[in-house]
Image (cartoon, rainbow over all chains, first blue to last red; front, side, top):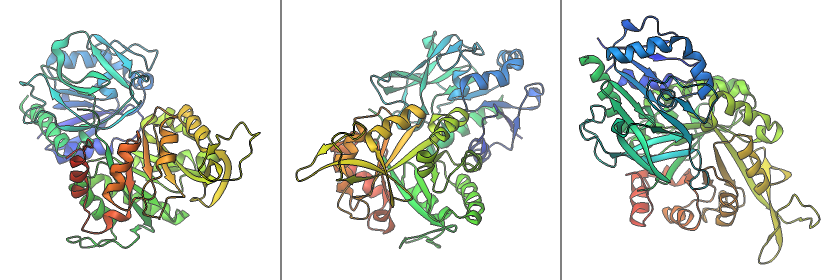
Length: 205
Length: 270
């Protein structure tokens, strides 16, 4: 019985993510607004909808619990904004990030590329031992929709990059902490495989 | 490899049913939007757009339930437009599982709606549809008109509302820049001049808009063949093409169209 929690920042549409987790092996998926009872779940997803400051405010009081869960090795997947908020700070907002990972979130260069980055782009996998990307072929197409990108201090976190104006880090992995800049729940069969991988990691943990 | 160009089928929905002559082999109920969405998705559509062409009050409930059903069967993004007038109309569509809403007439009437939507749901959810028609009644003294010197007559690109039936006097190039500032994430650009002609996308208009904004633009209106898509991608900086009728017959399935684009050197997701 794999039970996964989606944290709700209050910004709306979690239906697709919910459906995707259920469709890819999770036995039950619950929407939560606090991390106090996180031990009841096998994994946590931080969704990719909303804006930085409001998402951070909705989670600030629980940031200690989030860090504790990361330290305990709970599988956590941050998607898009849910990934960005794990870093120190973002050009999208004025509040501090959750500081689970070192690095910043920067706006995409509007002079070089169209912003938002919307559409299907290729994954260049740099960590071929990645658990999240198990079975995902090189150059697979995934769906992006974002205006900001992460800049981790530690390059070793980066599991895959995408070319958009420059090489953007778009998948991070550090033991059981995962993040994708794209939306696996909207990325067809490739995205489904990534969701399955995450559910499997939750199940085996 | 760069970002792929997107091919987006458009489904016109009336009273919960897809309209226009659709003949799909292997689809039990061709007019069922949910089944059609699944078929397009399986064939390799990059996104889908649903346009509610009736948009009456009782129709909104039908639309809401359709959105929820579509969201449960497809795993690619989809946009819903038609008759969205207020923040709560948009919220209802988004909370039921649509990834984006497309707003048109309401943007002209209440520009603030774009900004409100952007602040709550994020820029990526907000597609501003701009319907455009050439207006030959130019006024040289009006600085707000970007006059285009045509081969025969001068004109400006005018923003149209109410499904392309009513002019606004607003210059489309200025309007595109304005909606970008207001918070639009994408522009769905329909040429009323080209719409229904099947003679190809409006290259002149598409270039004029793509060169004025830094957000993605989707071209719409006039597509009658895969070559029209090739033309739009080769001659303009457009990010996506929308088409309806060419997918309505089995001879032109999405996978065939996309393979053709790839053969012609267009970056596509296969």
